[in-house]
Amino acid sequence: MRATQVSLYSTGDKPGSGSGSDADDDDILDAMMAGMDSDFSVATPSTPAVPVPENLSSEESESSHVPTPVDIEKRIKALLPEYMSYGGQLAPKPRSALSNNPSPNTLTIAQLLAAGLHLGHSTSLWNVASMPFVYGVREGISIINLEHTLTHLRRACTVTKAVARQGGIILFIGTRDGMSHVTINSAKSCNAYYVASKWCPGTITNAQEIVGPHTPRLPDARAGDLAKPFRPDLVIVLNPIENMIAIKEATRFNIPTIAITDTDVDPRIVSYPIPANDDSVRGVELVAKVLAEAVKEGNKLALETSERLSKERIEDRVDRMKAYGARQ
Image (cartoon, rainbow, N blue to C red):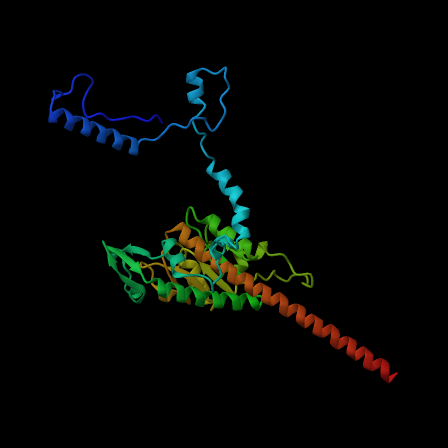
C-alpha cells in the first residue's frame, strides 16, 4: 500500500495566502495536517517479501503479490495430529447412530416423537376406548401420549422375548400398501413368520382345510394320517383395522396378540396394545424393529439354555459311565 497524504486544500493558491498572521496560521495548519497524515500512513516496504524476476512487467509483478487462498480442509487435516497430541478427543457418535435397530431398553420418547408415533386421527374418528392414551387435541387431531406408548411397547417386548425364549412360533402381520417391506424385513431379521399380502380367512380356525394340504408330513407319520398344521404362539399385527379377522381368529384359540392401536381402534380387542400412529411408515418400522430385537434376544437366550442343558446332559452321562466303570 502506498503512503498517501490528505490535503485540506486543492492544488493552486490557498485562500488567505496573503501576508501577515493569516499566512502564518495557514502554514502551521498545513504542517499539522502533514504530521497527522504521516502518523496514519502505511509505509511501502522497500523490498518485497517474495523476489520478483526482473523480466516481469509491472502488471505481472503486481499480480504476483496476490495471496493464494488457503485450503481449509487440508489445513484441518494437517492440524489434526497436533490436536490429538495435546490430548484432544473427537466427539463420540451417538448410540442411535451406531445401531440401526434400537433395543427396548435403549428406546427413548425422542425417537418415538421423531418417528411421528404421537399423531393420531381426527376427533371425528376417535374411538372412546382409546381415551386413556390421548394426551390432548390440537387443530382437530388427537395427540397420543408417548409415555404410554413407550410403556406398552416395552411390555409387548417382554412378552415377545418370553415367547421366543420358549421356542414359540411368532407371526408378523402387516398387509397395508407401502408397508409390506417392513413386515418382511422385520420377520426375516429374527427368523419369524409373516403375512404381508392378505390374510386368508380361516387360516387359524380352519387350518386343516386351508394350510393342511401345504404342510409337510412328519417323518414318523403313519399312512392315512393328516398333516398337522402348526398354529402361531404369538401374533403381531401392524395394521389391525385391515386384519380384524386375524385378530378374532387368534383370540378364539387363546393366542396372545400384539397390535399398534391408533385412536380409531379399540385397544381392548388385542391382548397387548401399543398406542401409536399406525399410518406412519417410519413409525411402524421403528416398532417392528424393536419387537424384532426382542425376538432376537429371546432366541439368543433359548440357544444359550439349549447349549447349557446339552452340556449338563453330556456331563451327567460321562459321570454315569465313570461310576459304572468304577463298579466293574
